[in-house]
Image 1 (tube, rainbow, N blue to C red):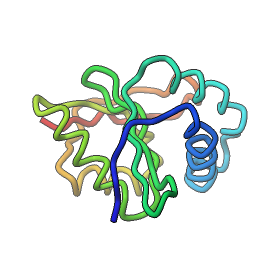
Image 2 (image 1 turned 45 degrees about the horizontal axis):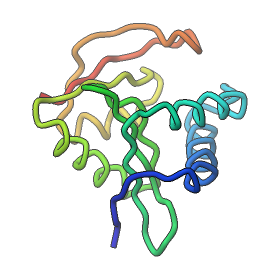
Image 3 (image 1 turned 30 degrees about the vertical axis):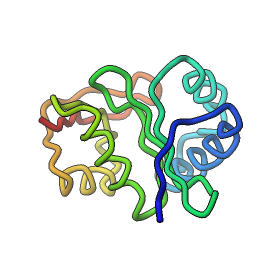
Length: 135
């Protein structure tokens, strides 16, 4: 059974390892190991974090700031649980930015009811992005 909870300082290493492993699989052309420091700083910055665990093991997390879903990192089957929790916490809707090359994520968000509302460029990578919204 997947349990949702807030993050603690002790979760940071597991969150970083999961985030890195998932991004390396999704976009291997980008060195996300260089961005781990940013992630840890961001997680400590007061952003709202929801962790998903099963049998005492971190299986995913989501970070939300205001009406923006900033990060969603999860093993298969856990992403929908986290996204449902974000929907519950943001009943007025929220937005996110996803790389246009990340077809798997786009399919997931579309299947879960989000729609493309704009496009842009990721300032860190220079890659084209979609802005998606749940309203």
